[in-house]
Length: 244
Image 1 (cartoon, rainbow, N blue to C red):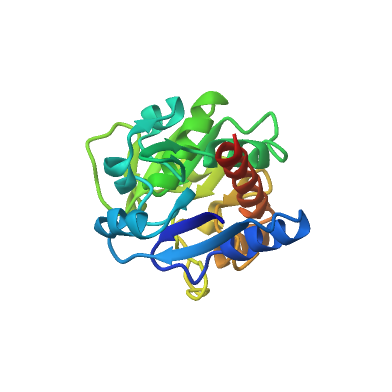
Image 2 (image 1 turned 60 degrees about the vertical axis):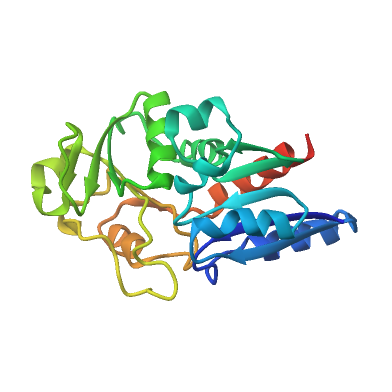
């Protein structure tokens, strides 16, 4: 049996187990199984690996950065980003990859327009790092928005947002878990009144399909998109890596 899985905590929101189980059935891959492993600490990973003969892992919140201390090598993207969402396992070799990069890029560019030159990236965690990598590749300037202050030149706090910043940055990407089920009534604390029909607002969250963040942006006439396409693409890219 070829066993694959997902680590993170909590995992009640995750679609991965259902997605891969259906994929294996649809494609007649009877020797493959996918399982969720909700671990409360990344320190539990070595024991998990020892107890299960895994061929590959997906990694989600909050371990995309922490997992790197347990791998044996990094892909070129992970070396730059500093976060991984996919681990290819071959015996004792654990190679860290980041398929969020290709997943986000393919999904994101479908709705981008020529006037979209600057972006606000909400959040600074592992997912945010993959998004920053893609924006830099696409030559989009970006400003990070976080709850805590930093000496980084391109980072501000939510309370530093103002009308000018909102109007200058016509792409807004939510990389935080705010609004994810079951916390449907929350959203990032930004100035929604200054979102316009020229804005492109993207939420990495896919469940619910339309978060409060996206609803508020849509109410201002913005183009909106959730993270479902990104999720499908990154899952399939993970599968390609595992079967390579």
